[in-house]
Amino acid sequence: MAKKTRIKAKLKKGIVTVKALASHAMLSYQEAEKAKKEVNFITYLVAKVNDKIVYEVSTSQFLSKNPYMKFQFRGAEKGDKIEITWTDLKGETQTSSAKIK
Image (cartoon, rainbow, N blue to C red):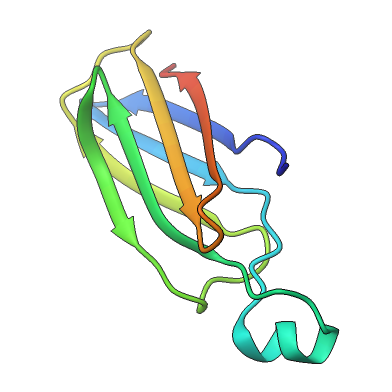
């Protein structure tokens, strides 16, 4: 199982900036063929605050190993919990959370 996603979320002037580092091998079709391993990469990522989706993305094999994501949104307060969940090609899901500072 992959390590948890590292999340930093800061509120400044009403805008929350989130930086997240997912721990994943992200093996594309070419890389997997060369390494003689199974293809696997993150295909879907969603971020929620108070059960409200604030960021949602479908991805492909274009992301690098251990992908870093940065996004911003409005409508949250300090102390709210942000929860990031991603799903990979094998169907494995990983969820991590952090408090907004």
